[in-house]
Image (cartoon, rainbow over all chains, first blue to last red; front, side, top):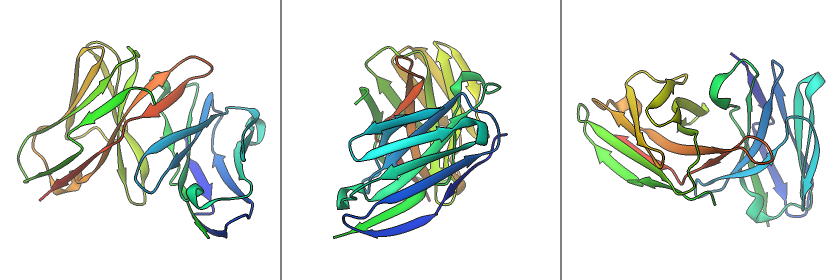
Length: 111
Length: 113
């Protein structure tokens, strides 16, 4: 099956700093999503981005499908950005739009 | 918020007992999913459903069964719970407007002693 690798595994920032999280995948995808899991365990959908670039406030994401990677940018980070960020993908061969998740990037934003 | 609830939210049980977790949605989405989350593994798909009485296995389906008799409810059953099934279980639905995006319920913490 498809492999999903996220980097870095851990990231510690001071409030106000910018960061870039990376997701590499091993096959062509028809679906790529970024999620944020907050410290209370809730999974929040950030972006559906199988290709191209999207922005939502301080967050933006870019997927370069031909090179099999996606980047999540967080600008002017806030303590509420802390948590785990997951990338998840599915492929054209995967029935039911089943998602394969990476292991996540643990982000800690200190005040 | 995609109108997904899970019950119970927390459960402690003993090895060998049956356990059923419930996922309920209010928006009539066709696709529903069960995942488990464990440290070092991210989320892994257990089973999913693509309609009433239509289900299929995911990557970690051994020891689990599912049922979907109504569009709004997707049940996950551990026939005989084992300590390796201690985990956090998430239900998800798939929305198809503007892309095929999955939205997750709040999760159920299960501890098998």
